[in-house]
Image 1: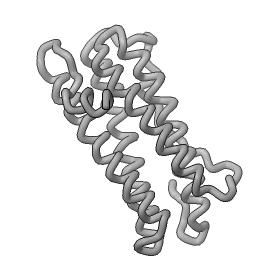
Image 2 (image 1 turned 90 degrees about the horizontal axis):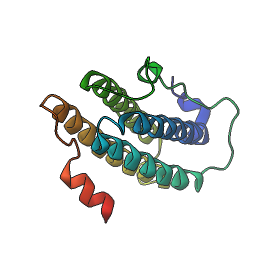
Image 3 (image 1 turned 120 degrees about the horizontal axis):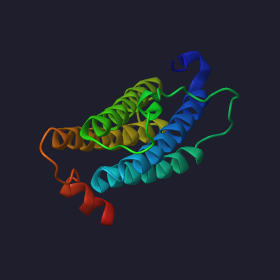
Length: 166
């Protein structure tokens, strides 16, 4: 699934950029699906998609070339729902669960990429920052999943709202 070390840092970087592009697309689509059911959950995904765009721009600053066929495949099982809009907690859990899987996958990939870079290099620092951002995404999505286990209430963690507003 990931580049081998022999393909080099630019291949990993191109894959990381493509990964953020695809995940951003999924999060934006899922946000639209969730909005009628829970605006708080939709906002979480929208804000995370915005952050992914900033990660992507940062990675593009380091990219020297873009290999063909570097787009990762992202499992979209949760997007293949019968209805476009999420209408119940089961649908919301499916989408948030899929988002959580994608965030964990990206975090794992960035850890791999960091391990391939010399300690202290610019790319190592970039991947370390991306891991920290993905750690935060995972934590927020896990909190959202926990909120879905309780009777209807906003799934918006207050810390994320404050951080996003700032």
